Image 1 (tube, one colour):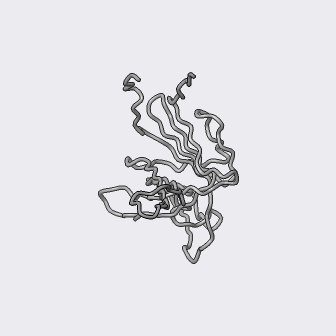
Image 2 (spheres, helix red, strand yellow):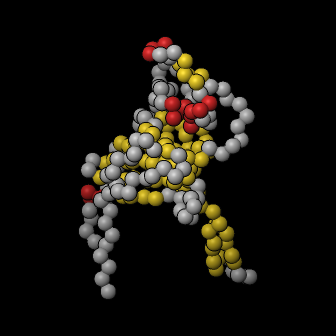
Image 3 (cartoon, one colour):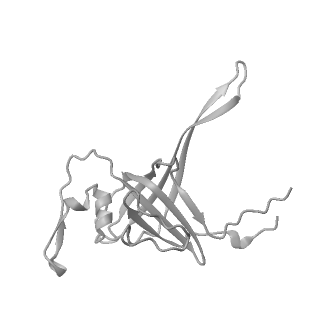
Length: 195
């Protein structure tokens, strides 16, 4: 097979959207998410998106042999890590502080407006849907996670030399059809299989 240099991709830019479980996902790579169901999480830091897969396997060895005769996958977890930059995004604040929008209150208008909320005992799962778009020029990748939960929140730093960021790790959960993540990858074409 010839070396195809234009198949090398970078994650030049991207977007993240949050929705309720059951939100209607776009059926094509280029269709815009429905603005009534998917909400833009705003600017993402230059670190971009990190996708990680953690797998655990059991090994089975035969008596007297050092190497396994079989392995069995026992768990597989996919997670997505991003840091958001816009403090004015209510959805980011909701996710970072684990507080529903219904439990937030906005007072005042214009530049004098502010939103208040209280953090307390909250052990209920906050399961949502996540849509990620990654762009590299004319090529794009779309990742749809029908059920996802924020499983880690990074440190939020207040200082004059950097932006206040909201680092979040989303972990994919199994959906009703048994899947956890769906990919649409632009520029990837399956080879023609010949007998």
